[in-house]
Image 1 (cartoon, helix red, strand yellow):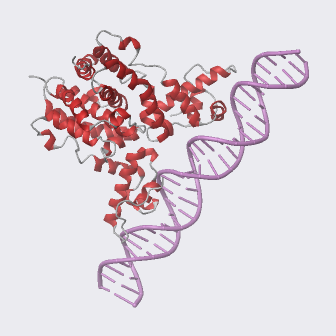
Image 2: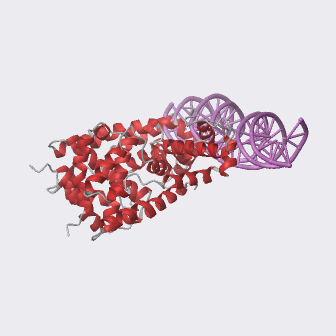
Image 3: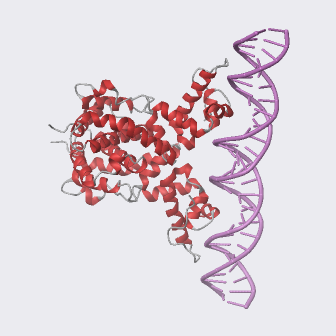
Length: 198
Length: 198
DNA sequence: CAGATAAGTCTCCGAGCGTATACTTCCGTC
DNA sequence: GACGGAAGTATACGCTCGGAGACTTATCTG
């Protein structure tokens, strides 16, 4: 599977555009194959350049991965402010989760990268920090009540599991399910996790 | 991390014992590093033999992986008969899940192997079949009602997510949580998923 | 137009991978 | 007690990986 340049290839010499193209290609490759599975040459080909240029721009594969990770954890897809402020938080989260873990849709790159790369301790460490500082604390402050930490963790685990089962393993029961059905199933589950009942 | 022979090394020449030792070592290695990440030499060292012997016994790395997968999917850790026949199915499942996804405990090798190897399409295919034929249908026939498929799928996703978050990423909220708290949190969630309320 | 400098490429290296062939060492059998 | 075959090893191959240094080419400035 040799990656062809997907994003607009910078035929004109343009450092910023090239750098961005490499970053985008790396993000795609890491999400698809994980840290070890993605090769520098493949990433470079996806950006329309040679492998050495990648190292020239980012120093090493590790630093490139760190930049991709930092780039990825900038956009909160599910725990976005509008979802967190929705009148029915549980329903909003359920809808967002179902939409964003849909089999086709280009999705939580961050999660995929994390999961695919979890073999290497370095990637796991980065991912732990990403989840901890980002999503865990965000969700935690949104739900309140006893066992907030654990409740938020279970919700994140549920999201992660859906991601895994719908996009990585692609078990038919979830990959082919009608979004409305999944939403109906998930809303009460999430509600019971985030609402303390007060 | 060079693996030392862990299981009783077959110093005497014993084909069956050696084969079993290789299989056990391979299972450990695949669970830790995934299909691509685990090397034949590492697996061999873990069994106290040389790499070539692995291929002599199993033909190739792929066939070895297939045998490990088949071996792994034999024991239903969570969806065991006794759990499925428990008076309170939801509570039994919650307890089993919490116990088996505990950070330290040697766990769902199958899940870990699947997740770590999901980059390679071959491993994902094997895992899909494993889940489909094994756990999905088992759980499905235990819960009944509308949307059985989807309900079972969500439960499996939840289990997978807990596994991921507690043992791969090890987010503190779940890795350090008290088992009793997690059980209390999960029981109603699972109950609402597997009981139709008929 | 010339040249400086950034942008990008070519070629090579050492290491590790899976695996094939040829070899050595032990054990059970007659 | 020799020996045939099984158990296990040694060495090497072709390949791909991440990375290093020298090289070429385009763009901008004077």
